[in-house]
Image (cartoon, rainbow, N blue to C red):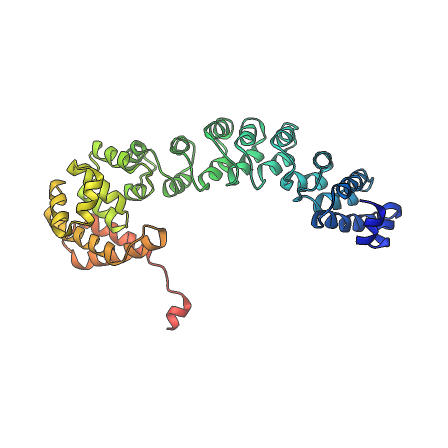
Length: 381
């Protein structure tokens, strides 16, 4: 960028302050204005080269304030030259951290070099970026200090693969900060949830069970009290199961695929579980079961129900649940499921008082959990 071009876009005072001022604050202000112009204004190739020379002058300024103005203003910019970004990333922390955390021009090799520098605060900055590749996450999990591994676990944009999970748990599996951060991730591989079970507290185990799918056999064992301090609701686990066929097969093999658990699943809106459970008991393919449950009318439902060996005393409850499912144009999303469950449980409790006490207690507990206090506007109405 020529002096003439610069003067056409900046005031003479900005140029003078950047080059000649002995006051750090004045040079920092000028640096900020120039950096904003460099980032936001279309520049020719020649102008871009000149701008890079000006940024190098800023990056070598003796005043921290000037270098920080450069780092903070261009931390998100693709126009920050790679060599200057690396220089800033190795500067003092107040200058380096914004660039390490945000700069898109730092590549995986740069980030891995920063991790291996050993400075925990810089490792955390890498782990907190908007995107962190699996390659970088593996180095964090295998080599970084605990705060950085925890920061990566808390970062949904950090791409954990099986190796990274294993490395993190091997090194810091006894850290509640790490295990709690893993539990709070939106998704976890089933094998990771299985490993976490033996490492975490009762409270953390409850959150893990509620939020993530467990391996079917482990779910059954916990429900049966294989671990004395924890039992789980297999119906809730059914709602989380990715491989529903395997889940219901495991329940069946363990003698847990009972009419009671299927009815509970229906009341809680887990229709996929109900379909697969009936298919498993009836030894009928899921696709055919689905048609008989949903598209073949009451005779189709009764036929598949009886083939599954389910008790006649519960047939009316099942039929009512399927009817309600279609009446509501039910979509198995969280909000819709809660609405469906509340209606379904209320109907079962009012119309089927002959249910065993255990079932009534279960449904009452679930209804209480689903029922929320009305908003002020609703009470006023």
